[in-house]
Length: 360
Image (cartoon, rainbow, N blue to C red):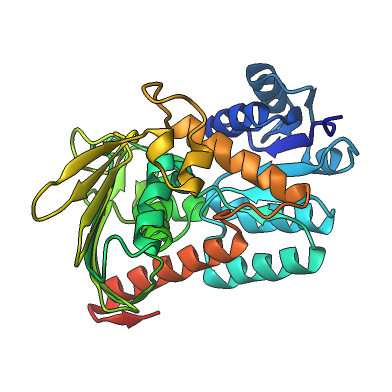
Protein backbone atom coordinates (compact mmCIF):
# COMPACT_ATOMS: atom_id res chain seq x y z
CA UNK A 1 0.00 0.00 0.00
CA UNK A 2 1.14 3.54 -0.66
CA UNK A 3 2.03 5.59 2.44
CA UNK A 4 -0.48 8.15 3.63
CA UNK A 5 0.08 11.62 2.13
CA UNK A 6 2.24 13.92 4.18
CA UNK A 7 0.46 16.84 5.81
CA UNK A 8 1.83 20.20 4.69
CA UNK A 9 1.09 23.60 6.22
CA UNK A 10 2.21 27.02 5.07
CA UNK A 11 3.26 30.04 7.11
CA UNK A 12 2.60 32.98 4.81
CA UNK A 13 -0.30 33.56 2.44
CA UNK A 14 1.17 35.55 -0.46
CA UNK A 15 2.30 34.68 -3.99
CA UNK A 16 4.80 32.05 -2.89
CA UNK A 17 2.09 30.25 -0.91
CA UNK A 18 0.34 29.67 -4.25
CA UNK A 19 3.51 28.27 -5.80
CA UNK A 20 4.41 26.08 -2.82
CA UNK A 21 0.87 24.74 -2.38
CA UNK A 22 0.59 23.76 -6.04
CA UNK A 23 3.96 22.02 -5.84
CA UNK A 24 3.11 20.25 -2.58
CA UNK A 25 -0.22 18.99 -3.90
CA UNK A 26 1.31 17.82 -7.18
CA UNK A 27 4.03 16.04 -5.19
CA UNK A 28 1.35 14.03 -3.37
CA UNK A 29 0.96 15.95 -0.12
CA UNK A 30 -2.27 17.23 1.42
CA UNK A 31 -2.51 20.92 2.24
CA UNK A 32 -3.55 20.79 5.90
CA UNK A 33 -3.61 24.53 6.40
CA UNK A 34 -2.15 27.99 6.17
CA UNK A 35 -1.66 30.97 8.44
CA UNK A 36 -1.01 34.52 7.35
CA UNK A 37 -0.61 37.93 8.97
CA UNK A 38 -4.16 37.97 10.37
CA UNK A 39 -7.04 35.51 10.81
CA UNK A 40 -8.88 37.24 7.97
CA UNK A 41 -5.94 36.87 5.60
CA UNK A 42 -5.46 33.29 6.73
CA UNK A 43 -9.05 32.49 5.74
CA UNK A 44 -8.63 34.22 2.37
CA UNK A 45 -5.40 32.33 1.67
CA UNK A 46 -6.93 29.00 2.71
CA UNK A 47 -9.83 29.51 0.33
CA UNK A 48 -7.53 30.58 -2.50
CA UNK A 49 -5.09 27.65 -2.26
CA UNK A 50 -7.64 25.04 -1.19
CA UNK A 51 -6.21 24.39 2.28
CA UNK A 52 -8.23 22.36 4.77
CA UNK A 53 -7.78 24.81 7.65
CA UNK A 54 -7.16 28.53 8.13
CA UNK A 55 -5.04 28.74 11.27
CA UNK A 56 -5.33 31.96 13.28
CA UNK A 57 -1.62 31.94 14.12
CA UNK A 58 1.60 29.94 14.00
CA UNK A 59 1.02 28.40 17.44
CA UNK A 60 -2.27 26.88 16.29
CA UNK A 61 -0.61 25.53 13.14
CA UNK A 62 2.26 23.91 15.05
CA UNK A 63 -0.13 22.38 17.59
CA UNK A 64 -1.97 20.44 14.88
CA UNK A 65 -0.81 16.82 14.70
CA UNK A 66 -1.78 16.59 11.03
CA UNK A 67 1.17 18.81 10.10
CA UNK A 68 4.32 16.91 9.05
CA UNK A 69 6.09 19.59 7.01
CA UNK A 70 5.93 23.38 7.34
CA UNK A 71 6.74 25.71 4.44
CA UNK A 72 7.87 29.17 5.61
CA UNK A 73 7.00 31.61 2.81
CA UNK A 74 6.96 34.96 4.62
CA UNK A 75 9.07 38.11 4.06
CA UNK A 76 12.81 37.50 4.40
CA UNK A 77 13.42 39.18 7.75
CA UNK A 78 10.96 36.83 9.47
CA UNK A 79 12.50 33.58 8.20
CA UNK A 80 14.86 33.04 11.13
CA UNK A 81 12.38 33.54 13.97
CA UNK A 82 9.63 31.52 12.30
CA UNK A 83 11.93 28.68 11.30
CA UNK A 84 13.24 28.47 14.87
CA UNK A 85 9.68 27.94 16.06
CA UNK A 86 9.09 25.22 13.47
CA UNK A 87 12.31 23.43 14.42
CA UNK A 88 11.55 23.71 18.13
CA UNK A 89 8.24 21.99 17.39
CA UNK A 90 10.13 19.11 15.73
CA UNK A 91 8.61 19.60 12.29
CA UNK A 92 10.35 19.17 8.95
CA UNK A 93 10.71 22.53 7.26
CA UNK A 94 11.05 24.24 3.89
CA UNK A 95 12.23 27.84 4.29
CA UNK A 96 12.13 30.18 1.33
CA UNK A 97 15.36 31.79 0.29
CA UNK A 98 17.16 33.70 1.49
CA UNK A 99 17.29 31.29 4.43
CA UNK A 100 18.09 34.28 6.66
CA UNK A 101 19.16 37.89 6.19
CA UNK A 102 22.51 37.41 7.99
CA UNK A 103 25.15 34.71 7.91
CA UNK A 104 24.94 34.24 11.68
CA UNK A 105 21.19 33.62 11.54
CA UNK A 106 21.59 31.19 8.64
CA UNK A 107 24.28 29.27 10.56
CA UNK A 108 22.03 29.20 13.61
CA UNK A 109 19.23 27.61 11.58
CA UNK A 110 21.58 25.05 10.07
CA UNK A 111 22.76 24.03 13.57
CA UNK A 112 19.24 23.89 14.98
CA UNK A 113 18.01 21.75 12.10
CA UNK A 114 20.89 19.30 12.61
CA UNK A 115 20.11 19.03 16.33
CA UNK A 116 16.40 18.55 15.62
CA UNK A 117 17.17 15.72 13.20
CA UNK A 118 14.63 16.92 10.65
CA UNK A 119 14.69 17.52 6.91
CA UNK A 120 15.33 21.23 6.28
CA UNK A 121 15.42 22.37 2.66
CA UNK A 122 15.63 25.63 0.71
CA UNK A 123 13.87 25.98 -2.67
CA UNK A 124 16.74 26.56 -5.06
CA UNK A 125 14.36 25.06 -7.56
CA UNK A 126 16.22 25.81 -10.79
CA UNK A 127 18.37 22.80 -9.91
CA UNK A 128 15.34 20.69 -10.80
CA UNK A 129 15.10 21.49 -14.49
CA UNK A 130 16.10 18.30 -16.32
CA UNK A 131 18.45 20.21 -18.63
CA UNK A 132 20.24 21.75 -15.63
CA UNK A 133 20.85 18.22 -14.35
CA UNK A 134 22.03 17.26 -17.82
CA UNK A 135 24.54 20.14 -17.79
CA UNK A 136 25.75 19.09 -14.34
CA UNK A 137 26.15 15.48 -15.47
CA UNK A 138 28.16 16.49 -18.54
CA UNK A 139 30.53 18.54 -16.39
CA UNK A 140 30.92 15.73 -13.85
CA UNK A 141 31.57 13.18 -16.61
CA UNK A 142 34.40 15.30 -18.03
CA UNK A 143 32.62 16.08 -21.29
CA UNK A 144 33.16 19.82 -20.87
CA UNK A 145 36.84 19.43 -19.97
CA UNK A 146 38.75 21.77 -17.70
CA UNK A 147 36.55 24.75 -16.93
CA UNK A 148 37.99 28.04 -18.16
CA UNK A 149 35.22 30.56 -17.51
CA UNK A 150 31.60 31.05 -16.49
CA UNK A 151 29.23 33.79 -17.58
CA UNK A 152 25.88 34.24 -15.88
CA UNK A 153 23.00 36.66 -15.53
CA UNK A 154 19.67 36.94 -13.78
CA UNK A 155 17.70 39.84 -15.19
CA UNK A 156 14.20 41.14 -14.38
CA UNK A 157 12.32 44.40 -14.96
CA UNK A 158 9.55 44.35 -12.34
CA UNK A 159 11.17 47.21 -10.36
CA UNK A 160 12.11 49.26 -13.41
CA UNK A 161 10.11 52.41 -12.63
CA UNK A 162 10.42 54.68 -9.58
CA UNK A 163 6.79 54.02 -8.66
CA UNK A 164 7.32 50.24 -8.69
CA UNK A 165 7.56 49.06 -5.10
CA UNK A 166 7.41 45.95 -2.93
CA UNK A 167 8.21 44.85 0.61
CA UNK A 168 11.48 43.39 -0.70
CA UNK A 169 12.78 46.92 -1.30
CA UNK A 170 12.67 47.66 2.43
CA UNK A 171 15.71 46.72 4.50
CA UNK A 172 13.44 46.01 7.45
CA UNK A 173 11.42 43.37 5.60
CA UNK A 174 13.84 42.14 2.95
CA UNK A 175 17.27 42.47 4.57
CA UNK A 176 20.41 44.37 3.62
CA UNK A 177 20.50 42.91 0.09
CA UNK A 178 17.61 42.79 -2.36
CA UNK A 179 18.49 41.96 -5.96
CA UNK A 180 21.44 39.76 -5.10
CA UNK A 181 19.88 37.99 -2.11
CA UNK A 182 16.61 37.49 -3.97
CA UNK A 183 17.76 36.33 -7.41
CA UNK A 184 21.56 36.43 -7.39
CA UNK A 185 21.43 33.66 -4.81
CA UNK A 186 19.71 31.44 -7.39
CA UNK A 187 22.35 32.27 -10.00
CA UNK A 188 25.27 31.48 -7.67
CA UNK A 189 23.64 28.28 -6.46
CA UNK A 190 23.17 27.17 -10.05
CA UNK A 191 26.77 28.07 -10.92
CA UNK A 192 28.25 26.00 -8.09
CA UNK A 193 25.75 23.16 -8.48
CA UNK A 194 26.35 22.69 -12.20
CA UNK A 195 30.10 23.28 -12.19
CA UNK A 196 30.89 21.32 -9.02
CA UNK A 197 33.27 24.19 -8.23
CA UNK A 198 33.07 26.99 -5.68
CA UNK A 199 33.65 30.72 -5.81
CA UNK A 200 36.65 31.55 -3.62
CA UNK A 201 36.98 35.30 -4.12
CA UNK A 202 35.02 38.07 -5.77
CA UNK A 203 34.82 41.78 -6.47
CA UNK A 204 31.43 43.45 -6.77
CA UNK A 205 29.71 46.68 -7.82
CA UNK A 206 26.14 47.46 -6.81
CA UNK A 207 23.80 50.25 -7.82
CA UNK A 208 20.60 51.64 -6.33
CA UNK A 209 18.95 53.29 -9.31
CA UNK A 210 16.24 55.13 -7.37
CA UNK A 211 17.17 56.63 -3.98
CA UNK A 212 13.45 56.65 -3.11
CA UNK A 213 10.46 54.54 -4.11
CA UNK A 214 6.73 55.06 -3.95
CA UNK A 215 5.86 53.54 -0.57
CA UNK A 216 9.24 52.48 0.84
CA UNK A 217 10.72 55.98 0.90
CA UNK A 218 14.54 56.11 1.05
CA UNK A 219 16.05 52.95 -0.45
CA UNK A 220 19.21 51.26 0.84
CA UNK A 221 19.00 47.98 -1.09
CA UNK A 222 20.53 47.42 -4.52
CA UNK A 223 18.69 47.27 -7.85
CA UNK A 224 21.58 45.60 -9.64
CA UNK A 225 24.97 44.04 -9.02
CA UNK A 226 27.94 43.09 -11.15
CA UNK A 227 30.37 40.46 -9.89
CA UNK A 228 33.79 39.34 -11.09
CA UNK A 229 34.92 36.16 -9.37
CA UNK A 230 37.33 33.24 -9.36
CA UNK A 231 36.57 29.62 -8.52
CA UNK A 232 38.70 27.16 -6.57
CA UNK A 233 39.75 25.50 -9.82
CA UNK A 234 40.76 28.85 -11.33
CA UNK A 235 37.81 29.58 -13.62
CA UNK A 236 37.04 33.25 -14.28
CA UNK A 237 33.42 34.17 -13.50
CA UNK A 238 31.36 37.18 -14.63
CA UNK A 239 27.84 37.71 -13.24
CA UNK A 240 25.18 40.38 -13.72
CA UNK A 241 22.06 40.58 -11.55
CA UNK A 242 19.39 43.22 -12.13
CA UNK A 243 15.75 43.97 -11.36
CA UNK A 244 15.77 47.01 -13.66
CA UNK A 245 16.51 45.43 -17.08
CA UNK A 246 13.70 46.42 -19.48
CA UNK A 247 12.01 43.48 -21.17
CA UNK A 248 13.63 40.80 -19.04
CA UNK A 249 11.01 38.99 -16.97
CA UNK A 250 12.98 36.10 -15.50
CA UNK A 251 16.14 35.97 -17.57
CA UNK A 252 18.28 33.44 -15.68
CA UNK A 253 21.16 32.33 -17.91
CA UNK A 254 24.26 30.26 -17.13
CA UNK A 255 27.03 29.58 -19.65
CA UNK A 256 30.14 27.52 -18.92
CA UNK A 257 33.19 27.34 -21.17
CA UNK A 258 35.54 24.36 -20.93
CA UNK A 259 38.44 22.92 -22.86
CA UNK A 260 36.16 20.61 -24.88
CA UNK A 261 32.76 22.27 -25.00
CA UNK A 262 30.56 25.05 -23.70
CA UNK A 263 27.13 24.68 -22.11
CA UNK A 264 24.37 27.28 -21.95
CA UNK A 265 21.10 26.99 -20.05
CA UNK A 266 18.37 29.64 -20.26
CA UNK A 267 15.56 29.37 -17.70
CA UNK A 268 13.08 30.93 -20.10
CA UNK A 269 13.91 28.15 -22.61
CA UNK A 270 14.12 25.25 -20.14
CA UNK A 271 13.60 22.46 -22.65
CA UNK A 272 17.01 22.91 -24.26
CA UNK A 273 20.70 22.98 -23.51
CA UNK A 274 23.07 24.63 -25.96
CA UNK A 275 26.28 22.65 -26.39
CA UNK A 276 29.04 24.69 -28.01
CA UNK A 277 31.98 23.13 -29.83
CA UNK A 278 34.57 24.52 -32.18
CA UNK A 279 32.70 22.62 -34.88
CA UNK A 280 29.35 20.90 -34.56
CA UNK A 281 27.61 23.02 -31.92
CA UNK A 282 24.08 21.80 -31.18
CA UNK A 283 20.83 22.72 -29.51
CA UNK A 284 20.19 19.67 -27.34
CA UNK A 285 16.44 19.32 -26.73
CA UNK A 286 15.07 17.38 -23.78
CA UNK A 287 14.66 13.77 -24.87
CA UNK A 288 14.54 11.30 -22.01
CA UNK A 289 16.34 8.56 -23.94
CA UNK A 290 19.33 10.85 -24.53
CA UNK A 291 19.73 12.21 -20.99
CA UNK A 292 22.03 11.22 -18.16
CA UNK A 293 20.14 9.25 -15.45
CA UNK A 294 19.59 12.10 -12.97
CA UNK A 295 18.22 14.34 -15.72
CA UNK A 296 16.04 11.53 -17.04
CA UNK A 297 14.60 11.03 -13.53
CA UNK A 298 13.24 14.58 -13.60
CA UNK A 299 11.99 14.33 -17.17
CA UNK A 300 8.47 13.37 -16.12
CA UNK A 301 6.66 14.29 -19.34
CA UNK A 302 7.34 12.97 -22.86
CA UNK A 303 9.52 15.12 -25.13
CA UNK A 304 7.60 17.96 -26.72
CA UNK A 305 5.46 18.49 -23.61
CA UNK A 306 7.25 21.45 -22.00
CA UNK A 307 8.37 21.32 -18.38
CA UNK A 308 8.71 24.69 -16.64
CA UNK A 309 9.15 26.53 -13.37
CA UNK A 310 6.20 25.00 -11.56
CA UNK A 311 7.33 21.52 -12.60
CA UNK A 312 10.78 22.23 -11.19
CA UNK A 313 9.15 23.38 -7.95
CA UNK A 314 7.10 20.18 -7.82
CA UNK A 315 10.25 18.10 -8.27
CA UNK A 316 11.89 20.00 -5.41
CA UNK A 317 8.87 19.35 -3.18
CA UNK A 318 8.81 15.68 -4.16
CA UNK A 319 12.49 15.24 -3.29
CA UNK A 320 11.98 17.06 0.04
CA UNK A 321 9.12 14.74 0.94
CA UNK A 322 11.16 11.73 -0.21
CA UNK A 323 13.87 12.83 2.23
CA UNK A 324 11.21 13.09 4.98
CA UNK A 325 10.36 9.44 4.25
CA UNK A 326 14.00 8.46 4.70
CA UNK A 327 15.35 8.55 1.16
CA UNK A 328 18.42 10.51 0.01
CA UNK A 329 17.58 12.23 -3.30
CA UNK A 330 20.61 13.61 -5.08
CA UNK A 331 20.92 17.37 -5.30
CA UNK A 332 18.33 18.37 -2.69
CA UNK A 333 19.21 21.93 -1.54
CA UNK A 334 19.35 22.00 2.26
CA UNK A 335 20.12 24.59 4.93
CA UNK A 336 23.87 24.28 4.27
CA UNK A 337 23.15 25.60 0.78
CA UNK A 338 21.16 28.44 2.32
CA UNK A 339 24.18 29.28 4.48
CA UNK A 340 26.38 29.24 1.39
CA UNK A 341 24.08 31.72 -0.36
CA UNK A 342 24.16 34.00 2.70
CA UNK A 343 27.97 33.93 2.72
CA UNK A 344 28.19 34.86 -0.96
CA UNK A 345 25.64 37.66 -0.53
CA UNK A 346 27.59 38.98 2.46
CA UNK A 347 30.81 38.92 0.42
CA UNK A 348 29.14 40.82 -2.45
CA UNK A 349 27.93 43.57 -0.10
CA UNK A 350 31.34 43.77 1.61
CA UNK A 351 33.18 44.09 -1.69
CA UNK A 352 30.73 46.70 -2.96
CA UNK A 353 31.31 48.76 0.19
CA UNK A 354 35.12 48.63 0.07
CA UNK A 355 35.76 48.34 -3.67
CA UNK A 356 38.16 45.49 -2.92
CA UNK A 357 38.34 41.77 -3.55
CA UNK A 358 36.62 39.70 -0.86
CA UNK A 359 37.67 36.15 -0.02
CA UNK A 360 35.12 33.45 0.75
